Image 1 (cartoon, each protein chain N blue to C red):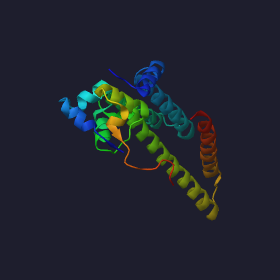
Image 2 (image 1 turned 90 degrees about the horizontal axis):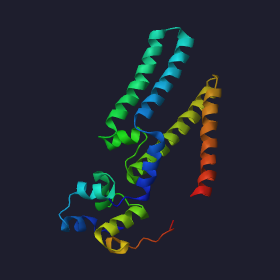
Image 3 (image 1 turned 120 degrees about the vertical axis):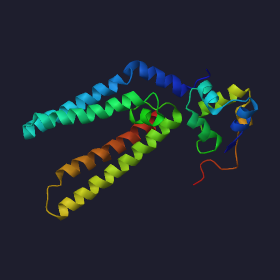
Image 4 (image 1 turned 30 degrees about the horizontal axis):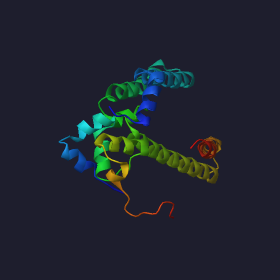
Length: 142
Length: 70
């Protein structure tokens, strides 16, 4: 096999993060935190379990499909080659742009209607700082 | 940018899947390169050239676009 640098880097990183079961563990952990927050807010163990099942189930499906589907591989955080990595980057950039526009729009709307806008401001600020930090970081790295 | 990947592959009676396996990429990526939808990285372009025993500029041809033009 000829192999590329991207492939070798990817194989090395898989050695660190292991197989798709790592993804399932992260999903269960995120679902568990959401479930605990739901439990604290509503006192309903059933709703907490549903939170765990939804996030854990989503990551389990991705983990099972990622070796058969390139799209599932991207969604699972393991693009199979450089083109799928580029697709992943474009999709992330699109999602970031939409998140920024929604948070800024929400901020403006909340302020115009006299509601609490601090949540939108925190998200918009985090996106802005992450973007500027990313430009500075990758300007140095790339 | 144009390329001869499809011709070189078909001359060797290889499927897109065969070439993809040799290069360690997906079949869709080979198809995207052949149809010009995806421009491979320099390491992958060099791997393709090496696989076919050709220099990179024999496989990929510049179609006159000026780099850095805005």
